[in-house]
Length: 285
Image (cartoon, rainbow, N blue to C red; front, side, top):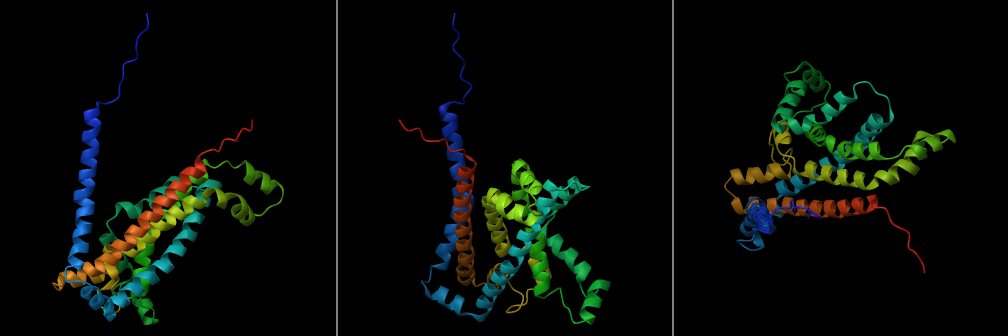
């Protein structure tokens, strides 16, 4: 007597309800606020955009945001590669501690991070007083903004690369090492092609967070317009001044950058998944 296997899949109505709930959640919490910002920015036509982006404060905020990203992202790419290589290829003591430290920027509030930098490098601290006495100002200046951004964006590249390097076979690397290849040549010729999509994915995440960071940067910047205000801080300043349309216009640029990052992430993720899928040889008849 044959027993028909009992289906354990959920009912159709349950699947449809879950899908509808997910779409409703995305629409209410993501798409609706995004659309409202664009609508508010376009309420008075293109004149709002022209006024906002002709402002010297807005142009400086955009330049500062891009400059911080251009400095922080390459540094974190190098740091992330070195951390991932060290954790996966070297017998380092305290690997679990290193992994825990990598999770620290995710678990600590960015505002707390900014406060820690002020306590450590502010003019009332011994280190900060010594630096200022020698003409090196960190807090309320570009170096402080860069340090805060480096801290909050540090894990993105390393966290993407560590699983890839751990899952990658070391046979080719070991063979190349036996043949006399140096570690730099091994990384460039063997390791990098295997992790390139993960590296690009982590770089995109790092860039998006660097341009959109608010909490830590707000604390160490001092909110000095035309000097230390990044684009997110400039949006907040316009909003506090009651210039809602201008704030929405500036925020729309951040939203556009977010959409570009999302598209790049999606394309990179698709390419990364394709790279993991084995290609079967074509049979010719």
